[in-house]
Length: 411
RNA sequence: GCGGAUGUAGCUCAGUUGGUUAGAGCGCUGGUUUGUGGUACCAGAUGUCGUCAGUUCAAAUCCGAUCAUCCGCCCCA
Image (cartoon, rainbow, N blue to C red; front, side):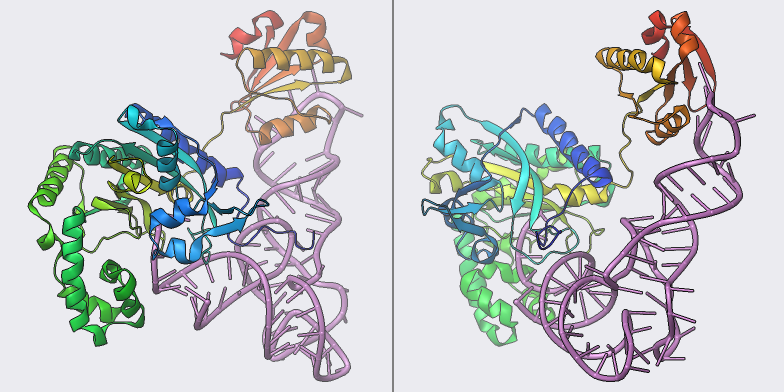
């Protein structure tokens, strides 16, 4: 125990921050359950190939951010850096193709070896959804609507922007890639070092570079939309039509490409300007080829994931805990009675705080700190009369009631 | 992985050009007739000045390294 601190990029979560995270997850669950999504829990680590093969060899996550380790049997395992690959793996492992569509949501810790910043941690929590087996735009619309409703229920829709783009089907994507690469090669000398590199590995990523020199080149680059074939174009138009119909405001962002290889057609991000450089709060897209890549056959998929910590940071107000009732014995002769009363009130559904020591005054102070709404006071007088004194801690008013009527009186 | 800033009580911070026992507010503990809290008043406790190694008669203050946090880049949730 040399260092009494947690590992870089990890945090102890408690108090207000934890309460907010809990709220994000509970609001999320209740929203997506209305759409018929059921919770799934997959392991926190998987065989390394599950991520390495499916997220894309050139993605940053795979090349530099995964927590990989060899277990005692010599297997290479990886702490999950994201949720989709694991859920899709579970889908394939369990032969769920038999009963489509499949709708899952999940929440839990993810791990990426990155430089920590505000809104970026090495262990962080995601809440995400996956809808498998639906090829029509209706799925895209529903999935985005669900994300939108989620943020609205959190009271954040006003500070979040929906950005959307289409990467088209594989044919469109390949066609565009070819056009883009030849364009970028003509301007090779004007590109930043990073982008020269990207040109080799993942040319689409040059599009959202923040380097000024790259932006200038990208300004006149061929538009993705122009490379979409008829089918892809129709698909995207249908998705946008649905969003319009539901009154969901969005902005088409031609530069939005997303980091992982498995996306096709619709990709989207919900962003805020309140978190500095980590503005993306929820992101997702369609991944029609992923199930097939894992040997699960031709099954379409779409989903999104949000950063629970990031959303929690946007929640302005602290989450109020339910106010308990404080049970206060005046002296030792009423300790037993107080114990019984506390237990009975809890059985009746009340949240009860009974402090663990001190005289009556101390206990009153504790009751106040616990934000109790009422105090149930029992002293020798009350004990003899089979009554208790109820004090309203907001108004200070108190009254004596029969012990037998206590539950009724507190309602 | 790269660039910049910061690091003093539980929290937010002050600490002058290096110079005796390092401060404030909030919080915490105790008290102001021992059957009554929240307000007020009184008293009190708390710091290896991030860590380690240097310069100096003397370092919270200067130099270096290291760790951590924050901001930006990369990238992402």
